[in-house]
Amino acid sequence: MQGINFNARGKRDLVMTAKLASQSPDSFEPLTEVQERTLKAVKKLRDVNGSFPTYEELADELCIKPASAYDAISLLVKKGYLRRREARKSRSLEIVFYPFDEKVSQGENTG
Image (cartoon, rainbow, N blue to C red; front, side, top):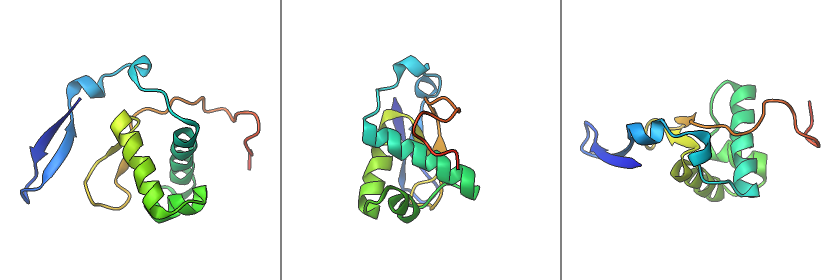
């Protein structure tokens, strides 16, 4: 569950409530294949670059447009897998829940 707070500039911010922060993995909505690819790409780019990707970097990685990357991230935020630490700030994502085993799945490049 999310609530709305007002930040110092008077802008509305979505904030995580204790209920959402303490959700068990079973309580997260399942991801579509596209959402799985997006979440994996976010983690990969964070691991490789040391910071979370911009929408353009994510779009390049997934071969989609930046607006589509924004939409994909927004859905992952809505489902609770990602969180934006600060609205309208580049690289302000945070992974809340990563449901994939850290071992490389079949078919993924070990690079």
